[in-house]
Amino acid sequence: MTVPSGTADARDHAAHTSGTISPREQGPLWDIEENCWTSGAESARATTATNAVMVFPYPPGILQGDQIWDHLRQRIGWRSVLLAERRVTRCGDIAILTYRVSAEKADVPIYKALCSSTYINDDHTWLRISHQQTAAT
Image 1: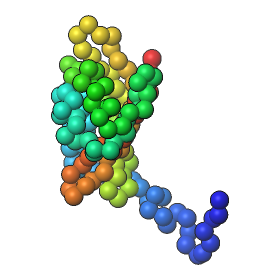
Image 2: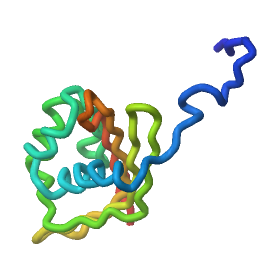
Image 3: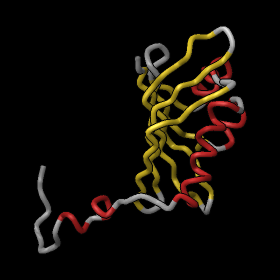
Image 4: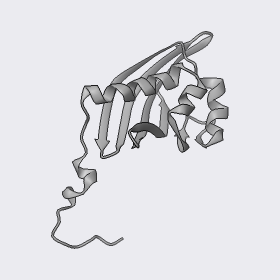
């Protein structure tokens, strides 16, 4: 691997100038995220990029494209969710949401996980391009 030479400090790169966004700007992203848990697969699909990647505890593991929707049709629609320890990082048109979820539905044990979702602002519309869950006890 080569390191670029020059006078520019590596911290001047856009990735090093990321920050958070205002609560007003965060609101729509958190609304989208919560709706993905509670409003069904088709609602989640409407706010997710076609080529998105999702990573779930094994099985099913890593899914992309239609694999995601085949899996989610059977597994979302939680009646209540709590998204705690919320954090948002933004770098240009990319926003990363991280949180701890506690999700509940009838006849299923409460599901707890650490999650992250990455969104891209595509022509003033936020679309999820990745989502990852790590089961938590």
